[in-house]
Every structure is written in structure tokens, then in C-alpha cells.
Length: 431
Image 1 (tube, one colour):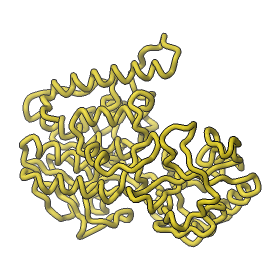
Image 2 (tube, rainbow, N blue to C red):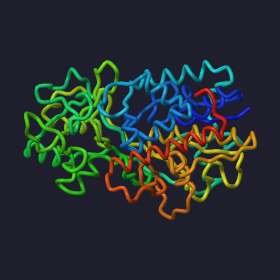
Image 3 (tube, rainbow, N blue to C red):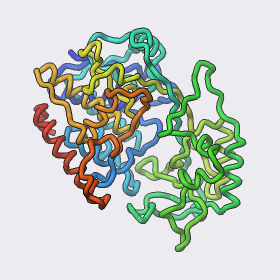
Image 4 (cartoon, rainbow, N blue to C red):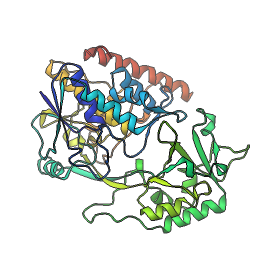
């Protein structure tokens, strides 16, 4: 029986793949006996930072390509996302509750998977550790004792407001550059409103962090107040950029986008507004935006410590531990960043574990996103940081092609060809 620790995206992917391929699994999850600072619901694969799994464009976006790679490998995350999908333009966004319920049901209905509610406080000798970026104190301490190179960074989530409290007369509907089906609510700001917002954002009081935690902020999920501190115009070129958005043929000075958080469209998230402000300050500052003057906050943004390994020193490209290849790690603890990337690492760790047990050694090449990210976390890197799916990690190719769209199409075709090769070499059937 294979032990999988953690029932987040990575652990759920790993357990489901193994169980659906006839391997007995003990899935150990500490919820609902104990919750991390960011989790609050009992279901598996709970999404806490955003409800978006980013772009779904297979031939024009690296994360969109990664999602297609996972679909072809039989990812339960991708099936759950399609089941729980909500409109979000060119992005793949989901109803969080429906998404988690789908994964939970898939896990619990698999007769090969045995769920155990308990907190693991020590590393096993074999299996898959997928305890996520908020690994519990006990296991984190054991990680540091035995591996000695755990790192910490901060992750922040954005507020969510109720649709009925949004002043729709101060919004306009539309997706950037006209892509999608008008799934975003856009909240325009004129110059005075923008400058007031930035000024109050910078003056707002932040939530107090524990003394033992370092203030190391990962660029990929940076709090909006930190971005604003880099210059008065920074948000106009980032979170609040108006480029590609027009109201009555005119481009606003700045725009905050709101995105559906559930299938019913009753809740909207503030896109890119991850924050560590105190709750009262969040209400005060975001209410400066005209459309949100009377907003009712269903969830405030929070900031919490994440833990990840110094993977280049510890892991192989198949996510196994160099000092003990029978033990695998998966999820954001390995240094992949993002929901889809976490699911990918869990699925690959399970495939590699099964391959090893069957005497196979197939590893995807860096011509696909799966392989490129796997190799990134294992490659020598003195300045290692978590990494999202992006074209920069892929093996170079098609340099002679000048048209960016055509080049990305060719990269995608090459990647999907490699996924098919890896799938066949790993004897993955029926997905």
C-alpha cells in the first residue's frame, strides 16, 4: 500500500491516479481534525487563493498548454474543473465548492483509496508527501531536522465581495482586448480616484505577522500594497492596467477587474488584489473604488506563510528524494507555484512511483511543460524560487519562426507529442 500525505490538489491527484490504476492507497489528511491557517472547509482539493486556474488557451499560453497535457494524462483536477467551470473569458475559473466536492467524491468512491484523518508529524520512509505550502508545524519541524533546507515565503489571497453590493452603474462588462464572452466586471477609476486609492492603500495598516516569520514575498503572488509601494504608477501597469479595456470607446485611467467566484455569479473576486491589510482597512481602502463604495465583503484577503524545499539540492526530476528515491514530494512544497502546477506534480509523482514499481524509468522531456517544470525544480540553482508554467522553462526551439502565435503553436504541438510519448511509455490507459 502506498501512503500519500495530504489531500490538496497534489495529494488528491496522486491518490486518484494510483487508486484508479489498481494500487492500494492510504491517503492521510488532517482535516477536519486540524486546519491550516488558510483552510476552512472539510473537502479535498480546497482552493484558497483564487478560483481561477488561469488561461485555457492551449496554443497561446503556457498554463493553458499545461492543462491540456494534464487532460491527456487523465488528471482528476481537469475533470473537476470542467465540471465546476464558471464563465471567465479565456481563463478556466471554477465554483470552489463544486470543484472540491467533485474531487472528494472521486477519491472517496475509489475502492482502492483508504482515507485516514490524522496529522503526520514525521517523514515516512516511502510514499508521497504532498502536504502543501502550509505543511503543519510538526511535519515542518521534521522536514527541517532531516533535510535542513526548507525555505519560507508569503502567499496572499484577494478579497471577495457579493455581487448585489456592487454598484453596477459604475462598472462595464468586458474582457481585455474583447476576448471571452464579457465575463468580467470592470470598475473604472479616473485619475483623482486612482491617486486617492493608491495614497490610502499605502497609508493603510497591515495585519501583524508572527515574529518568527520572515518577510519574504514571492513575486508571483505579491500583495497589492507592496506593488503600490514601488511607485505611484506601478498599479496602472499591473493590477489596475486599463490597456485593452474601453468604456464607450474610451480607455479609463485605471481599471479594477472583478471575476466570478461561483457558478451562480453571486460572488466576485478582486482580480490581482492579494493583500495583507487588516480587515477593516481592506473595507475602507477598496471602498474608495466607486463601484465598491457599498461593497459587502464575503471574504477578506489574508496572508500566510508558505513552505517549500530547496528542491535542486534534494529532489530528482521525477520528484523523488535523492537520498531516498522511495520517497516522493509533490505540490507547492517542491517549488512549483500555482494550482495547475501543483496538480501536475502530484500526478507525475504518482506516475513515476508506479513506473519505478513496474521497472520503467520514463520521465517527460523538457519539450513539454510537465517535463520542463519537473526538471526546473531538480536543476542546480543558487537562487531557487517557486516557478509557474511559462515558455521560458521549455527547451528552446523554432527560433527561426518570427511570428509569436505560430511559434507558440509549434511549441504546443511539440509538447503534446511528447506527452503522448510519455503516456505510452508509462502505460497510462483509459484516460
